[in-house]
Image (cartoon, rainbow, N blue to C red):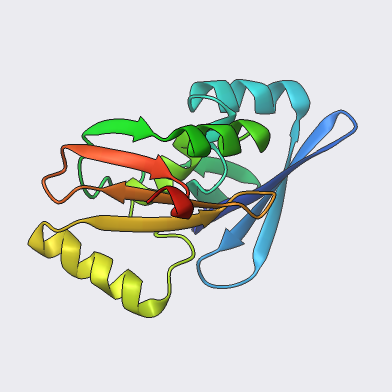
Length: 160
């Protein structure tokens, strides 16, 4: 097998009988991998459904795509969501796991450098963690994991 490139799945588009998967490479640039639609459905189901594909780390060997299991950095505890967060996810046809999987692997979303650095400290010191993501319609979603890791809550900023 040839050397691999690593990156994140950032887009999936159906083009007739084919599915084109776009991967942003860690070293810069992007690659597109094409699958027959049925084969792509099988791959997605093996990984746990559509919510578990976008944002996932992958390795590329030639034209083959292999999903990598990201390192889980902390326990989520009990997962909760406010009514506003549930409504926003439903309205955007997004699953919560797409964002929770990013949060638990240290992809803090749209935080400034200071807040991201605070999360790195919080990981080491056992403090509260915050992530912020933009949903497709622009709605901002926060995810907060409590310092004791007993609970993680999805909420909108105005519900804080």
